[in-house]
Image (cartoon, rainbow, N blue to C red; front, side, top):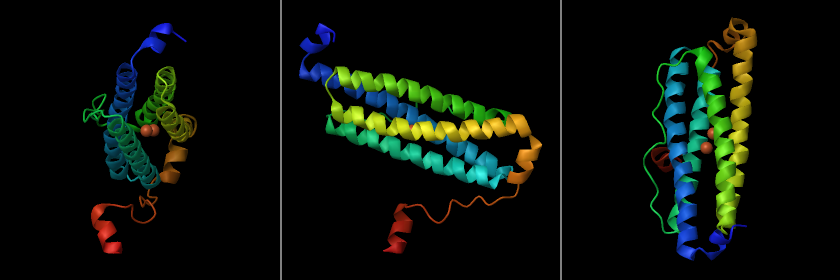
Length: 183
Ligand code: FE
Ligand code: FE
């Protein structure tokens, strides 16, 4: 290990970890709005099943954004509210899923590097957080990559099977109002 890292003060090491946690949070905030935008688009085109999964994945990303924020607060930092990139709008069917697969693939790569930063700076809790979230991003990648492959190889044969399917996400997710209604 680099001696500069070992000699860094606790505050300096903590600041490095907060920095990568916040970069990750910004990437999650971008993913949330990107997938929500695609959710409306796919729903509009009546590809219900694909729309539903897009919504569920956006909810996963919101959970990730909150997990990063909680850890940032524990370390005494301030969670960012700025997304890492602008939302791409009006993407066509040929673009959406290759775009998303690339996004997740890049996220897995970047989070692995962030995990190393946590290790170098002696934060095993943040390291484990990245480990857990990387597994989920990998699952997102597999889904997007599968769909992109079907669209590329089967085209309309695949899409005609999805057209008109239900956009239901299988019951209600937990939100404030729904939670109160269920109480
Ligand atoms: Fe995520
Ligand atoms: Fe993801």
